[in-house]
Length: 198
Image (tube, rainbow, N blue to C red; front, side, top):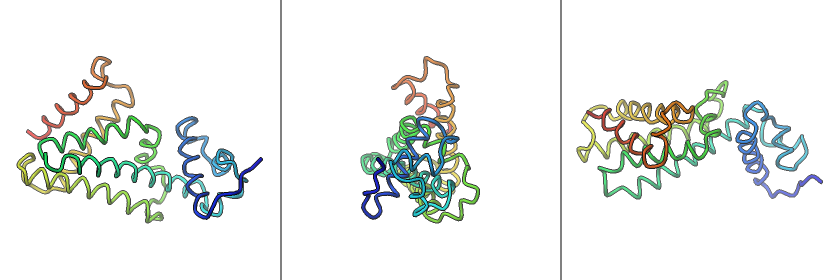
């Protein structure tokens, strides 16, 4: 029996969560408005109250992913706000942990699957927020002498590229097996960031 008993606003979130589950279990090829509706237990026409098409659903799924990532980065920044020497490593590690815990969502967030991302202002605003958070972390580390002086945005992009590439290689199983377990992976990330900052 279909469930059409969502309160106002709940259906949209239920469809987003259903979409994320489909991505995890079946991949992006299986994700449609109809499959999300089926997973959420509502009629196949119900999603159209919130999403014009699959692209709109993907935009909101990606937005949710960036919000979750931002929450982890913010929590880590708060935790290490008084320890700038550790902040950069811990922010990088939080990014890696997010990617490892949500690989399907992480890949969609950075896949470029949205055909016109500028048509989704909420998505763009959330991405910018994450980017500016990383820039602020770089500025904090520069002020503490942990990172060299220079354009903080350029440095943020360089560090982001390194950490993103690092975890992408891990997700694609490109690292030697003896370097990908727990503590070793964090130490490898730490070494990579130290080399990049020399």
